[in-house]
Image (cartoon, rainbow, N blue to C red; front, side, top):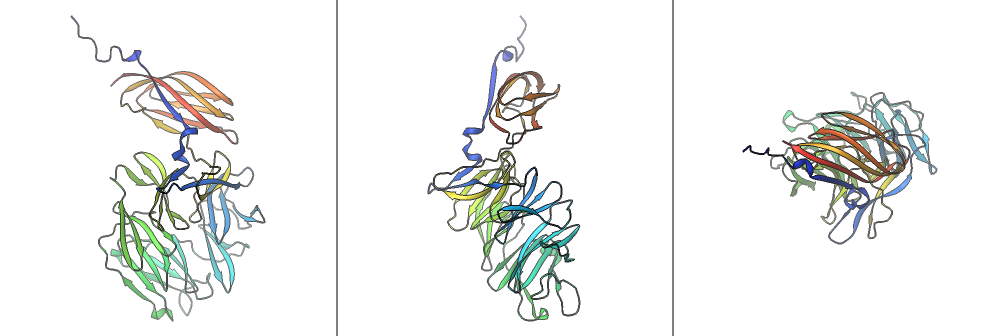
Amino acid sequence: MKTPPLFQNVNAVKHRFVLDYDKDSESSAGVGESGRSLVFTEYKSAPAGKQIKRVYFEGDTLFVYTSDGDVYQDKDLEFTLLNIGKFASEPDIVCFIEKGAKKFLISGDEGSFLSDGTETGVEKGSHYAEHKNMLFIGKDRGLRFSEPFDLTDFKSGGDTGGIINTEYDDGEIECLTESGDSLDILCKNKVLVLTAAGEKENFSVTRLKTEFLDVEHDSAASVGDKTVFISAGRLCILYKSAVKIIRDMGASADFAVTGRASSFGSVYLLPSEWGGEEKLYCYDTADGKEYFLGKAEALSRSGGFAFDAVGGKIAALKFSSDGGTVATFHDYDGTYDFGACAKKTLNAVGVHCKGTAKLVLSGDSAKKTYGLRDGCNQIKTKIESREFSVNFTDKSEGFRIARTVFEYTVNGE
């Protein structure tokens, strides 16, 4: 008598894997212990026909950087193109006060300009802070500072500007935060406190005595006069010359930083991955509450603004007791094994959507493209693989998916 094969009857069992975006409340809002929620709400339309790559909120003013290299400023309730040329990659935008006037510095690899089009010659940095009527720019292990009351004058020598180099063991600069009368300089492995009193010859730098630091790159952000960051897998706060450990962020296999940290009022925002799922982690330094939101595209460095590519609108964070009109941030593309590490046949896909698009399905045996119409789409397909790549292309404006259903059978190991 022959022994039946191990997976003799498995093909007869049909499985369903459902993604219900309408019910995925965690993708758009996080609820604290008090019942108050932190949500993204629709704020305003982006420049017509433009793909947003980065949103900025500096000096109570909204800016956007688009895929065609342009920078727009929100003026008089509409976006106006700045006459500063194009940037091949995302520039930095810094607001500072000079002689009582608010100014905006747009700094990129192609050059640095004020928002009125004036070229400044200021070199692009990685971190910025205005302190003691000077603009400080950190990059790698160097901290440059401007002439007092002339914040775009960084000429070396003479009486203008200067540079402070960190020590090799300090590591690269990760964040600059004005804290009272001093400037906190968070480095990879050390915290430096700069006292900028009097002439630059009298500036002093103190290295704090802290336990071992290993700051995760891009994890640090200024939240008011505090610096919040991840060190060796732990959430930490630098405040009043002391580092406090808040919580363990989990095993390295479950948690990873996926984007640059930012802030919204008293809330620290960190684009991150938890168990393979991208989320926006939020920690309120005022009350210690934590929130988990869905992935936010083009997140601003401050102010809590982002871009909802599906809805085509800029969205803003807010605290709410009723949730309000929530802007969701769904990334419909993905790679799925449906929770089983085995060879499978994807037999059919159902997509209920608003608008039109193309669905591209890929596996070991084939790559197929299907057109999607507005409403309910039932697609028959036969693709074999352990994992299946799902991508939506050529999406119409406002394209959204309410529900996706995958029907498959397991073939064997």
